[in-house]
Length: 141
Picture 1: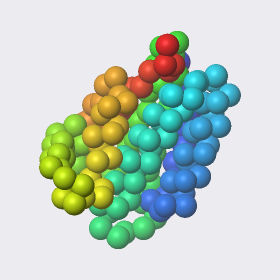
Picture 2 (picture 1 turned 90 degrees about the vertical axis):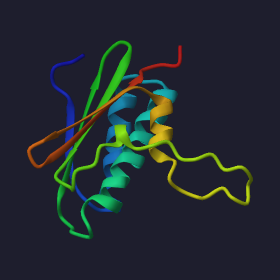
Picture 3 (picture 1 turned 135 degrees about the vertical axis):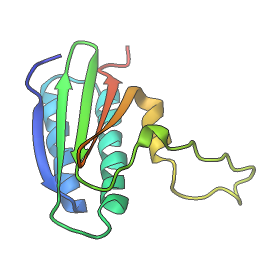
Picture 4 (picture 1 turned 120 degrees about the vertical axis):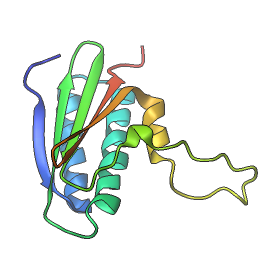
């Protein structure tokens, strides 16, 4: 794992999250990360970063979210740090399976999707900050 991560911070709004996702993708493409890992990292940022935006700040704007990305021969690690209300996605329950299409609900599956792509997912609360780290395979092979 490289010592210095690719790092950026952005304010807690949807347009800034989209810009951060683009910058991370560009960085990972330059590092030669394959399409599967690019998709997995983008999913992590969209779902976990999006959850911070939608639920963590109770409408307060301008709060920073920090992203760090490390690459190594076998993995890509993504860390998100924010000062939103405490939330541990590793303890979030899996959504109930619908017994029919009519009972299926839209939404509520993002954390479950991240788990499916992740090799590991760790959370910690440091003082007033949430930190979630997710590792994904760098390549499908």
